[in-house]
Image (spheres, one colour):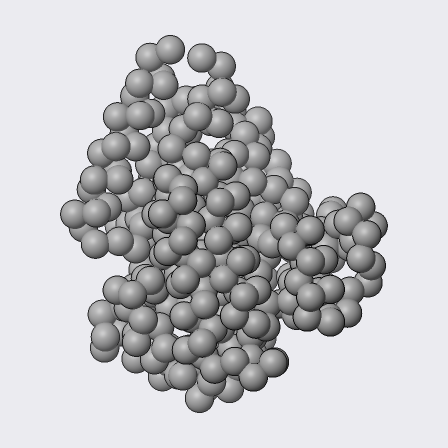
Length: 344
């Protein structure tokens, strides 16, 4: 079997994908028309490039701009339910067996929904999709670095309230540079005291110190991106020793200028040093990618062997925020399937 077929057919687990960055273009148009939401254009082919980021993007802040349009159509229960259902359907089409879908409920209150209404709608879509498709999922609730402390505390409590009801973890996302993770200790204390898994966007638009703060002040079990970990060798060794997984998003890292170019991405260095790296999309629509494409990209850029790719793929299952028994079942099934593929 050639490597591209192997990647396509392999079971996958994705740990870093934003729901509001993964809408279908036609769904955005449909919902905008239904709910009288303004878009820059209502023609599919004209609108699509306006929602996607390319190499001309200069920063993480610029990368966020298309989210305005996706979030604006996700302000009603029917929209949230549909978007989540389609998000999981599209993921299952990549042979993704498990995905952690993240978003910030606070961004979906513009038309009067409560935080609970937002969560309930999303979970309805989740349950419907899991019945229809061969996929398991969990939701990660995102606090935002630009939020006041109280707002993030409410989101952390929301995540705790929905623990074991569809939510697996609490995250900190948003504008990283100049907005230290340690400003949000109070919110993460709520997650910590309630034994809720934690991940933090860090080392994407800021340096290794941002990763250190996320681990030591917020108790992060995983790091979103973690691109600049190499800047602190002692911290790098700590991450290796503690096996703190990095949620790597190659295309997104290039677009946000987290790396100058992908050929110099630290992913192969981290992999060689036994950092538990995982490959993810970040935002399928806005980055114009899929999990299959990201794995192919890693292969083409860094010449990973099939065994290397298998390890990276399985890292996604091993570091999922799941109960131990469920995780072991998924991991065992994925190993069996991958081993069969490698025989051909």
